[in-house]
Amino acid sequence: MTRALLVRSVAALALTLTACTSVLGLDPPTLAPCLDGGCDAAVHDAETSSDSGAVETSCAESDAAPDATPAGVLCGGGCFGATYCTSPNPVCCQTTNDAGVTTYACTSSESVCTGYPIVCANDDDCPGSDICCHFTTKMTCDTTAACPTTDLVCRPGMPIDCPTGKACDVPAVNAGVTSPYDLCQP
Image 1 (cartoon, rainbow, N blue to C red):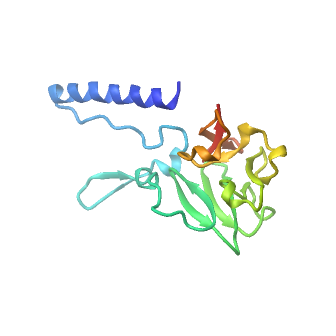
Image 2: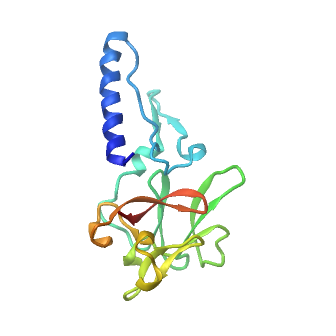
Image 3: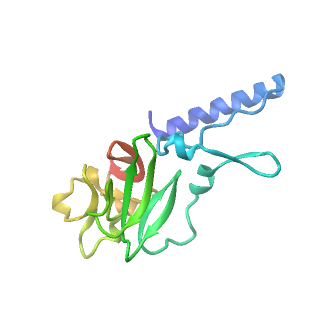
């Protein structure tokens, strides 16, 4: 099921349930903020309450894109806290503990990362003509010849990042965890 079809189906269901809500007097339905699988429910579905007693989730706010892209390698994002890694800690490190909780943090090098190192989040993070490529052991800058087109790391909504006929709409799976980074796929 494509993401667009899923979104339309969920919208139709929400509309139907909203109509029933007015008749039955129930609260309107809500969706988990990380329904697309890009979050770790143990950490990112945590709810916080405000002084008014309303319940909020941290995911909804973190999905918004910043007005301008900060310098450095995007580390995390989506429903995971996002930061940008710059010198002296230019490498993003994705780690998942024994309880299955995934976190992202900036480290000084790939060798210091005890999880999945992320050297780039798109081609702009790479020098010269190198591209950002997703491998099973890391995301790093490499040559076009060494990176299959289905492993190109891209920015959602940036068709220029992908070859003709491919879209930036498939989340990368890093070390068994669906990450907030996307790949070019048909």
